[in-house]
Amino acid sequence: MVKSKAEARGLSMKEKPVIYLDNAATSWPKPPGVLEAMERTMREAAANPGRGSHEMAVKASRVLFEGRKALSRLFRIANPNDIAFMLNTTHALNQAIQGLLEPGDHVVTTAMEHNSVRRPLEALRRKLGIKITYLPVGADGVLNPNDVKKAILPETKLVAVTHSSNLLGTITPVGDIGNVTRMAGIPLLVDAAQSAGVLEIDVEGMNIDLLAFPGHKGLMGPQGTGGLYIRPELELEPLMHGGTGSRSESPEQPSTRPDRYEAGTPNTTGIAGLTAGVKFVLGETVGRIHEKELQLTRELMAGLKEIPGLRILGPGPEQERTAIVAFTLEGIDPSETAFLLDRQYGIAVRSGFHCTPLGHESAGTTETGAVRASPGYFTERSDIVSLIKAVQEIGETLRT
Ligand SMILES: Cc1ncc(COP(=O)(O)O)c(C=O)c1O
Image 1 (cartoon, helix red, strand yellow):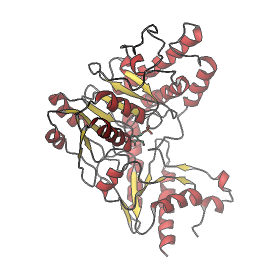
Image 2 (image 1 turned 120 degrees about the vertical axis):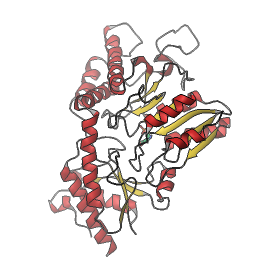
Image 3 (image 1 turned 90 degrees about the horizontal axis):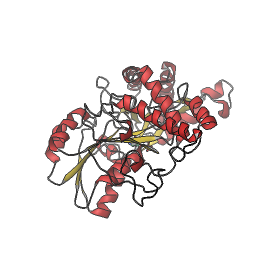
Image 4 (image 1 turned 45 degrees about the vertical axis):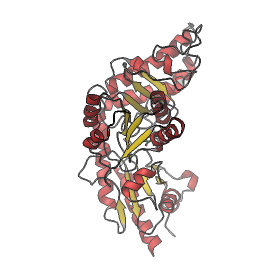
């Protein structure tokens, strides 16, 4: 039986200290200010934004505009109203994909995509007969921008790429791909689920036309928040139609942004928390956050690679990556490793297929899946040491 550190210290499982290494799913803990901003909004500005002219409704509208302004600074977006708030990345990706594509269109995407890109595309293949090209990537997940160029057809209406793989941590050369798509006059959709807040994103400089991002990961806000940047020249069919508080006399969805893409009452309290998270990121700077996370990731990789039978997926330690380390332990089911890490060591990681079966095909782990550890900005070096030691112990114990 693997020895439990928590138990060794006389702690019950309920009291066990959590070593949280699942930041790629949702970041935790949140920085100072997030909870406070949410509480303040709930107390003082929790009316319906854009739906009334009374003081509290105006305050609520200001909360949303503050959020759009902070996000615009982060992503170098000229007009904050080109950002529509969404529930999460998946919502934003669906708005982009379903709002743009029409029968007969062709899409270029990659074998590294999350199901939140693949499933909406496959649904449109069934419903509208769109065609999809999945560009292969190497086992390290690296995509060659020239392959994008070669795959473009006269009927190509969208190129959709993940900025960073949620399985391998590989970073896609979005700027180079943006040069290709802009030259070809084809919109580029970037899935920034794993990059927003941890990699530099400049929508103008990188020629990004559509940027789908979560609020609850690298931007350090709460769940139920996210957004979509839509280039001003690009018109999307709204995913949802309904009340916006504007042009109420018209049966049509307003053409003005962001109302066009924000039907229904928004998550004002959540957006207040997201704004506080974005301000924290702006204060710390994306560069410093990435540097710290990369350092922790490299230490983790260096320690894990010494463990017999352990294979780390994705780019080598010398290459840039986001803070994602997926691995397999020969002969041991990843779900068992993750279970033991949680129950015996109080370490939270994720196992399985991480919503990217195509990514597992590229990595050669379709049969097994993998364990994924994802440090965050608040991870301590001691957490990394604990994980390495625990994985080593699990490997030794389960193989004997
Ligand atoms: C690359 C990628 N795309 C999309 C998503 C979906 O994000 P959300 O949970 O915010 O909808 C994730 C979630 O982990 C992801 O890693």
